[in-house]
Image (cartoon, rainbow, N blue to C red; front, top):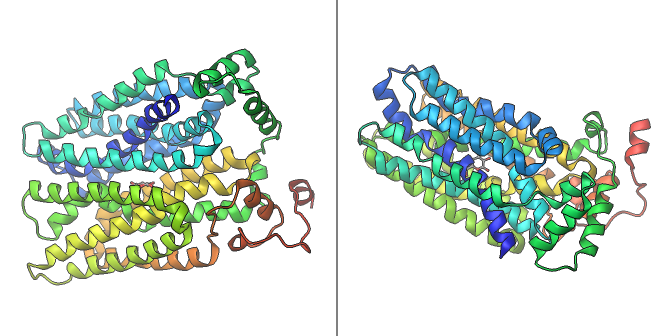
Length: 464
Ligand code: BGC
């Protein structure tokens, strides 16, 4: 039980990630009533969080290594509170942007440190499941933000109250983290053996922890690679895969929906703010349900069938969404809503749950931390690019062509996933690593190793 509580508290960082990125979708409709906003300003209010997240994700690995995971998460809960206060009390657009940037920094640091902490305190047997729980926490955060948006739409000072709700999970994260122990793995790395033993005994509720302690010590004996080394030829294919998946996740347009859904519904013909935000709430709920489905079935159905079906479905539904803007028939606005629902289900079972899972599985141990940092940064970067250009694209090309563009990215994604993404269901991390060391095509992961292939050790490669 203890471990679930510990993971749930740390997952509040994921919930805040979802909440603070999602809340803007409804808030924007009301901010623009208080302050006259140009398209560029709207995009900047949305993307200031992403700019912060991008910057935050750069230094986070270093901070978590030097100061420990726990203090870093405590600091981000403070940053969440500070940023939320500044944004909700703002009397100018600049202050909203500043507050949201501060929240973004916290999200960026948290999107790496919190899953790392969860993985390090969990026993091996449930580690994989807990990684997917992080995505679930993100979607629950998004859903809560949409519900808050709906509840307070139309009340006075609505956007301020919407933002302010983010303080609750941030305070809970701070209080909870205050009582949680440091990661035993980090303690061992710092040679604080006595403290590490005490923490493991507390987390596992048993004094039989010697085996796990030895395992952690052994894994720490592996020399982590330097930043340069992660670009060595044998790592490149997996690094490429991690980066291309992040690129596809964002360029398939998911956050145009998460951040701008009510605006899109208004474009599709829903007049009132409340009805378009209500449709958005439905989107948030369906996103959570489909993610729960994915968490349960990724290990049963396999990653590839879900990924390929999902990405193809995303492409088709975006194509339909684009078409609904092409003609003005009234019933088409319902077709627009239906397309977004199909799209979000397809995203949740494919690129949503799978990006974070695959990224935590495919990198060999000695590059895992650093390569995950690069992959997280890459994802925020593309998120920023898409979110800060969406409205401009709609103005320049019109909604039909804009959604067709994202649809074509999904078709491109389908081809890439078909040829490059391996099936890692039931394959141990060690087997995955052995394949990568042999320099075999990634698609062959899970198939028997080839005997005629020499092992490409990192030392052979880098000295070549
Ligand atoms: C993505 C976010 C997105 C969320 C939607 C995550 O996997 O990284 O950008 O907002 O899914 O559920």
